[in-house]
Length: 157
Image (tube, rainbow, N blue to C red; front, side, top):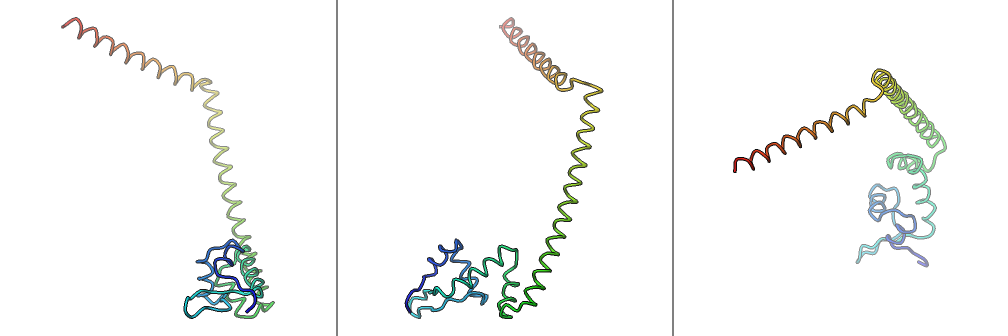
C-alpha cells in the first residue's frame, strides 16, 4: 500500500466525525480499504475519496443514509437515482407548501395584532403614557404610606 489515510485524517479531510465514518462502515456505505488486525485501525486509500465525496453530496441534498445505501447497492443505477431524486423534489415541494401556509398564517396573525393595536391607539392614543402614569401614582402612594408608617413609629417612641 502506497498512500493510506487513517480514519481521523479522512474525517478531518472531509470535515466529518470519526463516528460518522464508523457508522458508514457499519451500514456498508463506506468501508475502509484495510483494517489492521492487531490495532483495529481503519485505513482508506485515495481511490476511496470519490465515493465518500459522493455520499456526502447526496447527504447535502437531503438524502437519508438508507436512501444512499439503496443507490450504492444498485451500483448507481440511473433509474433508481432518478426515482429518488424525483421523490426528494416532491418532498421538498410539500415542505415548501407547508412553510408558505405557515407564513400566510403568521402574516394574518401579525395583521390582526397590528389592526387591533391601531384600533386601540385610535380609542386611547396614549395607553402607554397612561399606564406609566398609573404605575407612578401607585408607587407614589406606596411611598406616602411608608412615610406615614415611619412618622407614626417615631411619634410613638
